[in-house]
Image 1 (tube, each protein chain N blue to C red):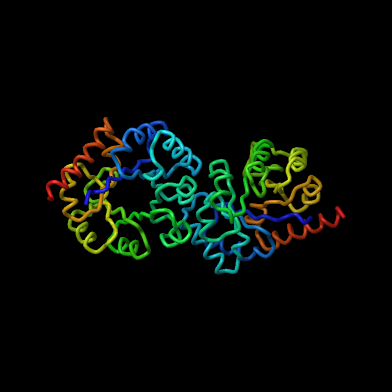
Image 2 (cartoon, rainbow over the protein chains, first blue to last red; image 1 turned 90 degrees about the vertical axis):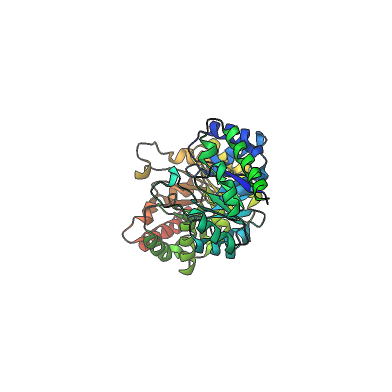
Length: 206
Length: 206
């Protein structure tokens, strides 16, 4: 199984930067998480409209928290966090949306699968500047989780391309990358490095 | 026509205060706008759950901005602001929700009606502490607007119960009250004063 490659926006770019980066890299990633916590529904909708106009397919877009925006823009899905609506409510009223849940503990992930999540984002797996001071989960906890769940566990947090073989070995269904692509000087090259890495990882496992 | 009485929450109360006030006054008002801008979707959902458990009917609840929360809680409708999703998108994908739009200018109100809003909240009509330094619209502008629109214009901003006859004469379809009830020492009495006022207004017009 090829690792899914998710790109997560960081909420720190201007609208122009965001549209530029995502338009450039979308062909190298499977899923784009529009995670713009400080933007209004209108702003997120307008960003999505610009992305679609730039050729990014709606079927690759996952909207963080705003289920309504995901719905009206016919996006692939929504990513729910602790502060979001519940998985079961979203499944019931928005049956066409894929539902991801961000989890930080084993029990939360089990609960997310039970409630009907399509996948979980689990992390942070490695040390990362955005979670400094907090202990990373590490590969053992990731393995323990992937053995317990049937839905894909997407690993997030401090992932560089050379980590992909060990993440695959730990059972991850994919990886989610934020600063590794969003803050790269050459984001196209960075996205391609992850893409190559996950294919290389596949070769090694074979 | 009896003036509709809308109560708008101020986003400043604790959850307990909010549920207490709204449970106490809901029988005296037609519509309650849950306008809690700084709360998450999960928090708003939990507040709505507590309100329903306290006997407040979902059919009286309008959620500010979060169309998704209004949908999953089967609320009466949603109130859209400048930063929200557009009226036409909401109408298309959420046909069961009533859609109010908050407007501050004549042209915005005309546009809202054209886009399919069920009503507009228009203000502020009178001077109010929450909009200090900004010139109120006044009755003449309100009259001009109500003559141009077929949908109800709900007046908001600095409305005390004795203003109801002149607001009715200006063609308002209703009034929306925030601090006049939310900050009253006796919110039940305050809500009843508005309720009596709108009936008294009706008598006078007759």
